[in-house]
Amino acid sequence: MAAMKRVLGIVLLTLIYGLGVVISKLLRPLRSRKPVREIMVIGTFHNPNWFHAHITPLTRSGVERVYLVCDEPLDDLERLVYLCPPPLLNRVLTRAGAKFVWALLCSFRVRPDLYMGYHIFPAAVFALILARLFGRLASFQVTSGQLEIEGGGWGAENKLLTALQGPSALVERLAHAVTGEFDSVIVRGTQARAYVNRHSAPPHVEIITGSVDTKKLVWNAVERRIVDATFVGRLSEYKRPDGFVDVIGRVAGSYPEVNARMIGDGPLMNALIEQLETQNLADRIELVGQVKNVYDYLLETRIFAITSRWEGLSIALMEAMCAGAVPIVFDVGDLKDIVIDGENGYVIADNDFDGFSTKVAEVLSTPGLCERLSEAAAAMAQARCDVDVIADRWRRHFEQLADERRD
Image (cartoon, rainbow, N blue to C red):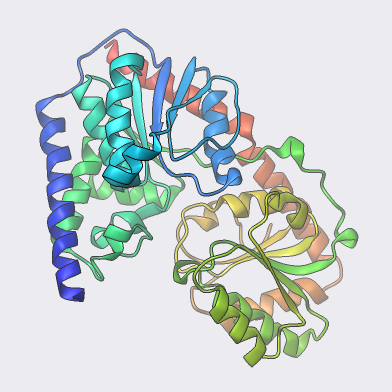
C-alpha cells in the first residue's frame, strides 16, 4: 500500500508540474503598460493570525483589489473580495480542485493583473496555469522555504507531497522547473532565496516576510511576565513539540520553578499529554490548545522557543519578538535572519537539546539578561515586520514588475 501511494504521488505530481511547465512555456504573458492594480490570491488559511500576516499587507500595498480564493471568509478588509467555491463544488472536485475551477470561472469576470499562490502545490501551480491562460503575471509564495521543493517536497505537510514518503529526484527536478517559470518568487529569508536562485533562477526572487500589526501589541515589561517559556504551533511532527517538552524537562533540573505553555492543536496532542505524564511535567506545562488571539499569551511570556525540524521565517516568532519575548531557536530555515545570536536571542545548533536547555535556564536565571534581550528583540521585529513596512515592500515589488513590462 505504501509503495502504491508513493507511485501514485509521483505520477500525479509529474503530470501536474509537467502541465504547469508546458503551459507556461507555450503561453508567455504579453508585454503591457498596465500596472499591477488587481491580484488574485489562491491559498488555504488555517487561522486568522496567518491570514492577517499575509493578506493585510497585500491590501495596503497600493493595489485596488485583492481577490482571495480560499475555503471560507475569515475577516473583512478594505479592498479584499472573497471568491470562495460553493460547497457542492468542494464535494465534487475536492477543496483543491474546487479552488482551481472557481478561480478559472471567476477569471472571466474579474481579470486580475497578477495571480499568486501560497505553497508550490497546489495553489502556486494553479496560479501559474491561470496566469498563463489569461496572459497575466504569476507569483509563487514559498511559505515553507526549500522544504516544499527539496526532494519533491515530501517533508511538507500537504497530503499528496507526504505520499512520496521520501525524496523523489524526478519530482524535485520538476518542482525546480515549475519554480523557474514564475515571474516572481517570494521567499521568507536569505537561505530560501539562495536555494531558489541556485536551482530555478526565476526573473525575480524577493524576500518579503509575513507581517505583524505592532499597533495591537502593548509591550509588557519583563517583570510583568508570568510564563517562562512558550511554544506556538501545530502539534505535528514537523514542529517537533515533543522537543519543547524535553527542553522544559531538562531546564527543570537547574531551574526548578520553570513553567511553560504550549499553544496549538494537532495530531500529536494525545501523545504530548502522555509525554507530560511520563516525565512528570503536567503541572509545569499548560496545554492551551488553539486560541483566537495569541498576542495576549505572547505578552505574558519571557522566552519564545522554536524546536521545529524546519521553518521559513515563522510568523509566530515575529509576533513573539514584537511582544518582547526572547527568542531561543534551533538553527533551521531562515530563523537567524531575524534572531541574532547573543544580541536579541539565541540560535542553537539543530538537535542540540542540551545547549538549548542551557540557554533557556541562563536567560531565566541571569539578572538583567532577559530584559536586555527582550528590548532588542522587540526593536528588531518591529522595524522588520510591521504591517506597513511589509505593505511598502509589496508596493515596490509590484511597481518593479510593472516597470519591467514597459521595457
